[in-house]
Image (cartoon, rainbow, N blue to C red):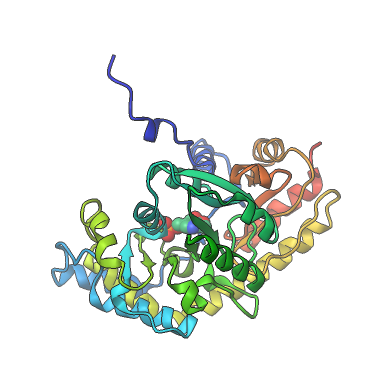
Length: 382
Ligand code: PLP
């Protein structure tokens, strides 16, 4: 009998969203036609011009190690995008290109969390926050915040061991953006207690609201905020594994050591494709955003017509988080078994999400309509 694996991995909970994706894959392989309202993949085919850029790069020999922090061209393009968004100049030297937003998050936590340190994470919140904090030896502390952040509650969770607050807007799973008041409260508390902020904005290109509040929108906030972002959701590039970490000035030269000794670098041809993606932003992204918006409004309207379901259309992303007022795990399991409709139970994002389901509008319109027809006909099981 071989030795036990390290607790670091053995004790991690499997990702509930990945598990549902696997269940759907297995059911489809067994010949079932599953209507997928569970996916976190935007379902957008990558634009052919982005693919061609990668192809050109590979044929031109850009297939060797690339600079560990990212290619100068892509770091410049990301810095320009961040500068444009906040109005505060962002240096390319403060940006690291990472394999997806997930690794940007892990890098930020690796750089800030020591063994036993506490990190405040949103609840309900994306399934990887807690495991990533634990992988860094930290202790996750859940902040319940279904709609808004309660500053007093947040302040009450800060202890002498707290080092960082993870903030996510637009929020996965609710699909909502946090308000300026939320940002002000978090930055004020972070300043008072000298905490880092790790801000995950991977859905920030899919905001329908007129404004997008963020903690790095002020020089004080910028000085303590690690910004996690990704090409996955914006450009339909989930499989490319391309994201970035924009950090407070001057830290990248130290933080890069973690990347140098782990993934080392992103393939140059993928970074070349990323730069082309950013250059096509104005042409591509507004259309994606409008499509998601239209589908979210339609789904919210149809869900609200079903007894027992209450759903506000979120102001961002491609998710909805309807309240179903009963055991969400039971409902998700029964809809999958009986209706072939896949959703994610809200409690998969932490107990604060119980009584909700996360649904996404990444499938085609006909598939979504059919799923809603089945849900409307069957009703919410009690
Ligand atoms: N952050 C949130 C809130 C997400 O929902 C996801 C993906 O589902 C990610 C980060 C990471 O995305 P990626 O690693 O594909 O960039």
